[in-house]
Amino acid sequence: MTRPVPARLLAAVMLFSVAACSDVREDDSAPDPLVAPVPSPAGPGAGEPFLAMAPDGRVYLSWIEPVDSAHALKFSVYDGASWSAPRTIRQGRDFFVNWADFPSIKVLEDGRLAAHWLQRTGTGTYAYGVRVAQSEDGGATWSEALIPHRDSSDTEHGFVSLWPEGAGIGAVWLDGRKYSKAGHSPTNEMMVVSTTISPDGRLGAETALDERACDCCQTAVAITSSGPIVAYRDRTADEIRDIYVVRRINGGWTAPAPVYADGWKIAACPVNGPAIAAKDERVALAWFTSANDSARVKVAFSSDAGATFGAPVRIDEGQPAGRVDVALLRDGSALVSWIERTGGDTAAVRARHVSAEGKPAPAITIASSSAARASGFPRMVLRGDDAIFAWTEPGKPSAVRLAKLSNPGG
Image (cartoon, rainbow, N blue to C red; front, side, top):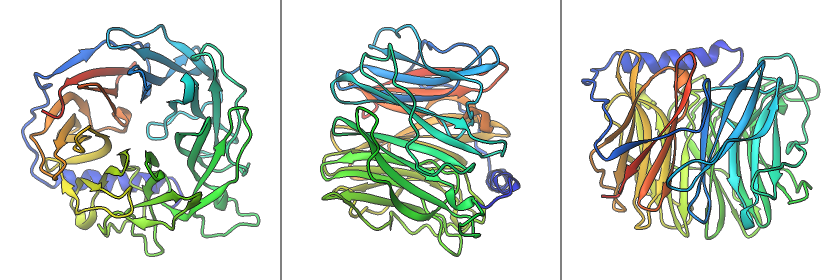
């Protein structure tokens, strides 16, 4: 995407126009019988949920919630029967709260936790930076916040993905240091940048993984038997914005490589990043594209830790808004979630199982939703034989909702 801000609006208008000009299917957004609601621990006005799994099978949910004239990043833990009392990770009046650039929580070695959020650094609309904290006592107390990026310009630093890195953390984010006019390129390009964080907060080397990426699409990361693989939306010189990956092999990062040549040419950011999941050498990667004015959600598999991907499988139902997530089942199949438009401003959170051979099962409706930005990006994790979903329900106040899908692989 290119600044100024109307470029974001342009992307939203383009995607809406594509959907509005097509035949809209009848609204069948009632939840599937296999879907059961799960009580939410989040309070009124909550949004931007994120889900993470612990090795012991517990599910961690984080979210943003208004508190007086500030915002708080909170979390709770689900043991399969109930949620723990919510705890606050950090609270402040300078949070950057955005429907697409949301905080996260991760479970590290020995039950340690890490979380990230975003804080404003200046008066500009997108002047904000990343903050990361760690906890050694299950989230009762948290370390002082640290900034993973060396750049301190009042530009955008966000769309973060964290992963366990030995006893510490790996982090990747979109970095806007090239937007600073003084001493930087006037072409204003976003970068994909990575670093590591030790348990005591020391930063490792900072590495630019891609010098030119799409401005505001989420990054995603998964751990293969060969190391981390990072997925993101690239941006070529002629404004092709397809999904790329970089992998860390033997301590070094590979050159950026496309997952599939959709050829989506768009001179604005669609705010619609990929999702990735991995187990050993097996990788599943889901994404949204609107190449040739045809909105689609796709999933592709890799059997060599992301070095190559097979032909993608289309899994949407004709009117996708995107906002994907993906989980990899034990048999190498995948569960993909996305938002599907069902007419006007209405939409549904949908999921579809795709076999290891690439055969899609019928789509399942998780919940009715909205196509508006306020509905955010639904998140999903697998817990045993169930899939747990979290999403934002728009309204005044908004709410974080949760549901459980039984036996998603059939």
